[in-house]
Image (cartoon, rainbow, N blue to C red; front, side, top):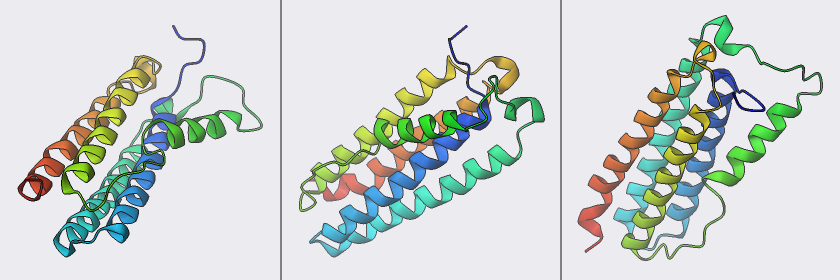
Length: 159
């Protein structure tokens, strides 16, 4: 048992924050892109992050009461602030990428998605079964689908 066990609800909060950061990442890359086709793809990827944010919000809403309850007394909501900071820094941190290079954009996007998968796999160990541990598999599956989509959309332009 970890020193602090998270609930699935808290992990979904982080997942939603990570999706928001992903939207910002792709929109910034699109704004900097010189190629119009690349710009459209990046905006499509930003929209995909919006869709996943909505999926995670729905999954969070669908949690059982026991999966939403925190395991610790936290009257000042410090855990939420900690989790937000963790989500802010773990995946879509500020990256300097050459947005003129589709290959570099693709590499940065796939790296961010891989980082998010590793992050969720680590968080899975911190969520007890009774607090919704199985729900993290759905998040991980969604993030894995991002990599397939990014590869399919950007690979033709990365040559």
